[in-house]
Amino acid sequence: MDTFAVDLLPAVSFAKPRPRLAIVSTTSRLCGIGAYTAALRKQLDEVFEVTVLELDQYLLRGRHPRLRRHADLHVREICAGLSGFDAVNLQLEHGTLGSATKDIYRRFCWLVDAAPALSVTFHTLHAPVRPTLRNLAEYRRNRLLSQGIAKALRRAQQRKPVAAIVHNERDRREVHHLYGIETVYDHPLSFMSGPQAAAVQARAARREFPMLAHIPSDARLIGTFGFLNNYKGLGTAIRALRHLPDDHHLLIFGGIHPNEIAAGKTIHPYLATLYGDAYADATPYGDITAGGKADTAAIRLVVEADRGLAELIGPHPRDVSSRLHFMGALDDDDFLCGMAICDVVLFPYLEVGQSSSGPISQAIELGCRVIASRTHNFLGFAEYHREAVEFFDIGNYLELAERIRAGRHFPARKGMPLYNVETNRDIYLAANSHKKN
Image (cartoon, rainbow, N blue to C red):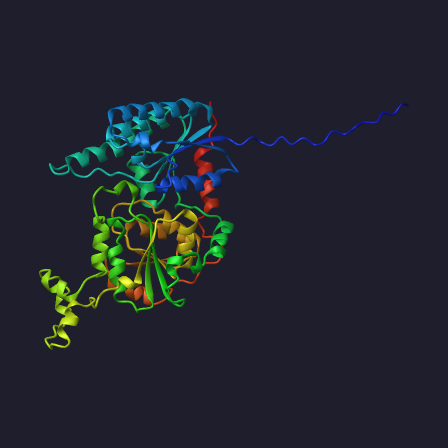
């Protein structure tokens, strides 16, 4: 019997192709949504073939009629390409679709109609307020951006897969019960894996920040992070600094948002209020002649000739400007390293109806000691990260100072938090695992 030599073919792997996912989002580094989208793309790369379709903010935020027409064409072009994907995720911060309410709604509806299967990540929920003559325009805007968008999604889910992703339990319940969306997932913002956080911690050192070279090495550093804005509550942090020992320093990482840079102003009004809170360049005499500030009663008037004038025109006794450091608007790597060197990462925000905050999620992932004001947003966030956030009442700078002095209330976490980039990936996988018909 003849024998034949048979060359064995190498084993062929028939790996299942990854579904094609389009993420429609801004990619601007000036917007927190852009930073989150960049992190999300890395998280999802193992389970999807991800393409980010950028929302051009120059066009979409424009108010000139010609820009608005070009913006509509831009969104139409995005819509024309969506049929080639298995699923589409829209990172929805309403302002990234336009400035005018009707523009936002119209473009949103185009994207919903064009997507073969859709998930919408809500970074803000608009709730209608009771109409009055004073707030009629706000009422109309919120009504269209809540009820109008909800209606568009309810119609869409009758003919194709639609899911919503939100960042807290309260929003999950509102999107399900008030918006009428059947499939809703909730998960806090997540940015860094364990190895990524470890790399930041390994690099972080005070020597990386030349502006801190003159600060004693044993100084206690309190850090705030993000663009400077009224709702960030930085005045509370500065007033708390007055009641902390001299070895405590407040570092403000971030600057005025470029969209708020105004021509001809010597200083942004919000920055001016922070200088006032710190008593920078103030004197007791100036305080007296300013017309009776709340703190003037604490000033001791001296009439002796050899002492009175010096005390009246010298530095204000409550001047903490030497312990207040504006670190500027840094790139993402330095921003995270700044968090890692701080003894306390502070979020003294006011209540403005926010649904999420990127910096507090990053601080938790880095294992920082986090102190936050008791806003609905942060209380909801802490439900996912138990024993990780210390709280104080909004604006209560005395409570905040005592909280900081008391030392860390919760032990430092070991390993990744319970809700992390892996659980976030699983949420997006579940929300976008739909085949085209």
